[in-house]
Length: 193
Image (cartoon, rainbow, N blue to C red):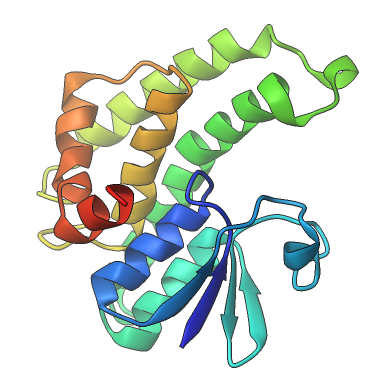
């Protein structure tokens, strides 16, 4: 059984969602970042943390990739061209969407007030919108990497949810694309509780 640390309002949602999709048993410890429970396994205090046989794995994208590989779903085989393309898309979503949302969040409520630069948020919103539009223009398949969802799609869709809550611009095309994932029963069941 897996044990996931992190509240649903964080990137831990990605891990919980993947576990629900896989139908795996897990324990959810809904604690905030930097809590003592998290720091036992991750000195930075960042969530999520996944415990597997009392060994901690950190970083949501690393955890998603681990779970997809371990259970043989949502990832192309390691060493394949398809996997290389999938990993490239995952890192692109992390660099061009997730990192921008994280920058805006840090300058909104995470950094000490004297370190926040609130003027950065409009630029973050502009860059995010531009990057999403470019990704969607290039993708010609049902999902980011083909006809079945991959780890990249979980992160992409979660970024849509995060962007909405952060009041970032969400195009109809982005919302429509992300809804392919967000309307999946595992996500709906997880977020309706």
